[in-house]
Length: 199
Length: 253
Image (cartoon, rainbow over all chains, first blue to last red; front, side, top):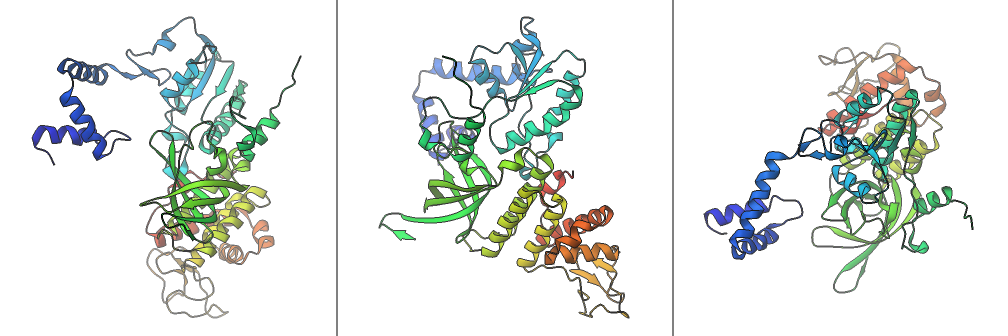
């Protein structure tokens, strides 16, 4: 137990995900020993983040203006929307540098056991975006786990009457992995989605 | 259980009820295991794409496990799928929501960790199998599971005698009032304020679901199935003293 402001810092750091009491103490003493200029820069960034960062009014991604840079970019294809669970999934898809469409962030996946149903996600906003007929393909890139699959099933059923092409990224064996360690469900999907080798 | 002097390793099979994210790539998995009862265990690295656990620790999966006893939580070292009950459910939204209500109920009905609950485990396996095989309406499968799991836990609703005075139903004594707090049907003298008056066919359906009379249950009318679901859900949540969050999201086909 430390006194006053040092203890306050340890307690605040301990609120962060994945940081326990010992970790919080270690970070606090690292900050106390660090160059004050570095610490001030960190404080300034934290301050700026809380003041400036908000969620894009169109897609729900993190943004510094009313719209995120992807929604504001006229070069991005407005006819394709990739639906993801969290803003960090947008960053993951952007890393492949091949996708040129837009995004829609749901804010999670349907998980009744955690009390999260369709009304708790940004599904109404997605349906509003699909209503004007601009979108021709919807890529359901929710996580390849049970909640993600069930969310994709729910959305596919909801979108079906609109006549929009609904796709889902393939699932199967990870590149660089070994076949013997693949579980039955993953291996089964990989075999289902096998493709012809044209050599 | 095998004791190697430092850590105790044990093997058991169980159904994955739910999981929570832990740290960077781990999960805390809650299981209802055949011998051990409800266990919470850490699956390290399971969220990574190349995890050796893959889809084996997804909810609904019946899995054969090797675990070691940790200080606060056990740790899963090996997992082999026995049957992935979740596979057919992910593509069928009404069955998925029904299944999650079953998993949540199983978790609530086994409040003490590592207290063996073999009958609850077997009931859950049977319920998930019936749900996946899609031979019966998911609403009926859910109600049958809820009523029977309540019965196993000691909360079976009284359907053939008055829940308060024990008078058996016969031609002279009609049991028409269903008191949630009373524990089932009551005679006119014991009727509690606010008791429901379900149709006799609804009570017959509840009895059929408790006994496993699927021929009767499958042939029952929709309005009686709806009434039965309402009574069962209210009865379950009253006696558990806890709401089952998934029930609100159960979608009927």
